[in-house]
Image (cartoon, rainbow, N blue to C red; front, side, top):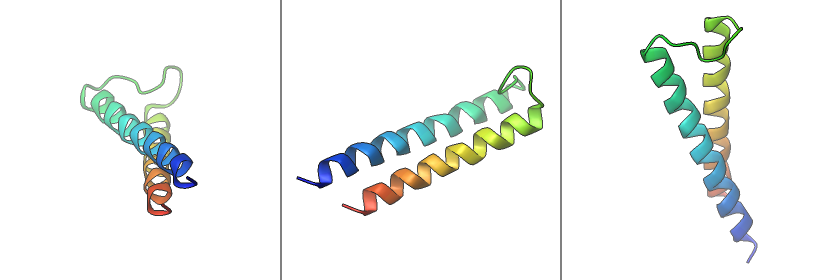
Length: 65
């Protein structure tokens, strides 16, 4: 009963992190800006860091089941 929220949170975090990394990679591959009005290097680095962070958080939640 208590593992339900952990499965949901882990899945959401992992999917969001993976999608953010995939989207950032596609934007960089096409040489398109990741965020408008921000340095390209800073926005790419920040999006990558948060994508990895959310992916790791999702995997951590799923290991706590």
